[in-house]
Image (cartoon, rainbow, N blue to C red; front, top):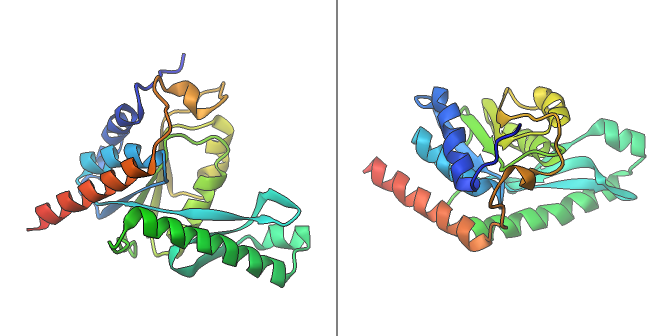
Length: 220
């Protein structure tokens, strides 16, 4: 029977223990906002690694928005799925319009959550992407693609719980998938938590600021 986590902090502590094998590597931990950030904060603390967010947006096919034809991330990063674009018959103008729309959302969210802090460089580093749970894997897949485009040398996708089908499909997107539970019966991420109340922006901002102060102090 699947174990239920008390809350995201509890799940993050347990996930951090599982990720101990990365402790002495050049690691950056990236949380997927909002719910992934409290989990990521605990994992980063366990690894003594810097914490940041990775904000991604899927660019949906115009007539079927849930079908992603591209993903965008900060800094103008665009990863296009040429196969989906071709099969859907999307023209260049529609693709670019979608990219611009979602890119604006990305930049707005990044500015709000990170403030005036600079993005932590990923080039040549091991990037640990953390969410509070993975259901379909579509957002995680987009995050892997964007992190790779931003220069990550190795991507470890980590979550307390992941649907079995998503875990199978994500094997080609990340270099390693670390999940505490991959249950056969998966309805929703929230069923694996006792407390799964929504994570607010203020909590995300506070966790990022606290992690930045901690890293600055360790560097002195």
